[in-house]
Picture (cartoon, rainbow over the protein chains, first blue to last red):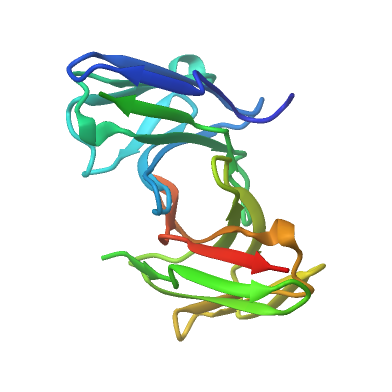
Length: 115
Length: 112
């Protein structure tokens, strides 16, 4: 499978615990994005990487959220001290760097439930 | 500010044609995308417009008017499998960002 891969697919955690999600983008895609999606809503932008550099982080993202992309390959998204409001689908997407049209390819997402 | 509006829900009959509208007001514009998302699955790319006019792709077509901040997705010969959410997204591009800003999505139900 050469698509965007996310792990785990589902995560149930107790409020206050830390969680970490992993995203493996399509090989040679240098752009990587994290989005969050709640029921009945469109994906909401969280952060953007170009290679290993995190170029933008949404102002909606609290300090409890952190993302990394060491070596410009896979990425991790960590949420510290989870809250019930963090329950959502976390989507990762990647795209190649080129001029003009660039389609973002999405992974299947990690569904987080905070109880 | 960023604002993308699309209807929340639509219904249609198998074999019919449906048009899903999207209006946008964004600080930057570098193209408009339509994605399809079945329940519990990842969004998948349908179409892309960066210039005004109509782009046709099989049963699906997408139209863009940049001056009006308006796009629509046209689905012809509807099939049951077209029941899904359709997401309108604007690409925002600058020196330090390249991201898609999504609307809330339009949930389409196709009935036999």
